[in-house]
Each structure stands twice: as C-alpha cells, then as structure tokens.
Image (cartoon, rainbow, N blue to C red; front, side, top):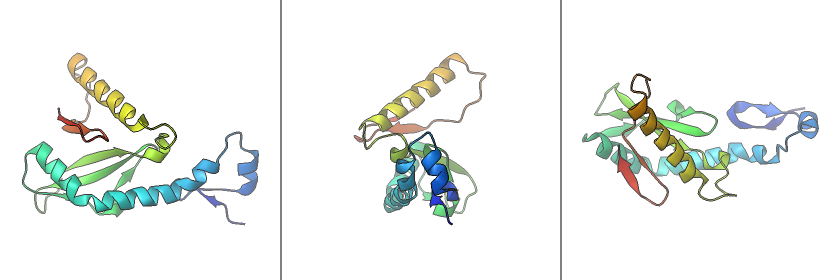
Length: 148
C-alpha cells in the first residue's frame, strides 16, 4: 500500500500515522501548500528580480529555474543570478508561511524575520570574526523594507 504523501517526496504509512504521537494531518497538506506557494512566487518573479536589482544596485537579475530552488525545513531560497549570463548569484530567502503557523497566527512570518535580522545585525556588530552570509536587505509583509 502506498504511503501518505509528505514534503520532499517522503511518505508515511497509515499505520505509522495512526500510531505517531504527533498529529500529522496538517503535514498532509504541505505538498499542496508548497506547490501553491511556489506558484505564487513564480507569478512574482519580476518583482523578485526588481527587488534584488534594487538592493544590489545592478541593472539586471534573473531568478533561477524552479528546479534549482533550495528548500529547507522552514524557508525556500531562490537563486537569483546577477547580470546577464552570469554565474554570480545571491539567494532570495522566503519563509514558508504554512510551516511557521502564519495561517493560525498571523504575524508569525514577520516575527521570524525580525528575530533573524536582529540576530544577523547583532552577530555582525558583536562577533565580527564569525562568518555569516551577507544580508543586503529585508522586507515585511506590509511592504516595509530596509537596506542593511
């Protein structure tokens, strides 16, 4: 018998789901929610390219093919190539709202971003020897953005 679909091509058997201590019902919706979220991001491809171009002060950027996007447990990182036909890229990182409870607790995404940005800034100012990725800018769901 085929298992129930989860993220990243994983499955769980009905027996395992029934005996699991966690309620996995919400996890069964993740594949469909991820597909819908990625589709929404793709409709905003030009906006993403414009934002990256603005923050990096360059004329042209290009979002990588969806097949090259990187998925973590709570974020998607979209490679954005700088310039035309360039190998140089940055990552446009977006929280997965369905994984951080945004539907149930609106504002979770902004809170996650506030904490992460504050941590980046604190490490940069207080631990300059600790290597961290460059943070060029960030934005919240209300459209407020900052250049770092």
